[in-house]
Length: 384
Image (cartoon, rainbow, N blue to C red; front, side):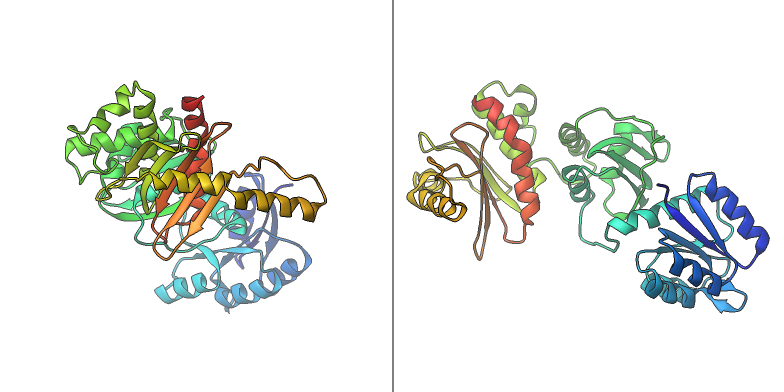
């Protein structure tokens, strides 16, 4: 079923032109020549988007937008105007308008605005500050989003994701990995998401994790900005060579730990612990964090996953479910919150190992858990 769009304008010729154009994009379009007619249509059907002019025969389009929110709360608005003031923009945004199009606008701008409004029905819109571009890219990758980001500022361009993988980048006359390097080198800027265009060219075919690591390494070597490689990794670091020459199992596990630390905002260190031998197999700490685990650390994790209290939990769950207890009990994930840290633990596949990630208390639970979940198969493959 195609998305429904209500177009409101008191100019019959413009209304007809817009209606015919939007229908060619596959939308189910309804016309309204007045604010009153628009409210009647909204009351009679479920519309995804309302596209309305700011001036409707003396009626303020902002008033229509306010009324529309009460009549059809899930309908998102695109406002058109040739002379909207800054206050009009603010009022429209405060009342839920997704985009304000300044006349004259192109068909492409209108199509993008309608796409943004449709996407808003199932997502949040707002402003985030203080995040690096790499932080945003990691979020889109971990959530496996299909979307596009338009960037403005020192390096205007765009980045395009399909199912969490970065498939295209462009900046001025550059595309692909070269454009990505320029965009990641920019010290600041603004960004906005746009619906992904299926016709977007595929100029990048490198898996996301390797792509980001390679690009940041190249930026660091070129001296374009302070190092954004994993903390402590430079040309003289043994771990730098591990990116390309990880021959031993320990080296490969350390590389995976470093990647988890880099990809998880607020992470302090990551380790792989073997429950069978109560030993730390590999570990990596963020910059300024010395990773020194005493013998008690792996034994503590062992007690968490195989201690008596786990068996008691299994017995209690079996009693509640009126079933046989699961012995030996198999825990998969544990998250521990303290005043100063947040610890994520995950049992690795069918092995006797556990991934441990220690983070700041501000680290979101979804990020920490997702980072370990993604690394799980790779760690399991190394240990099997």
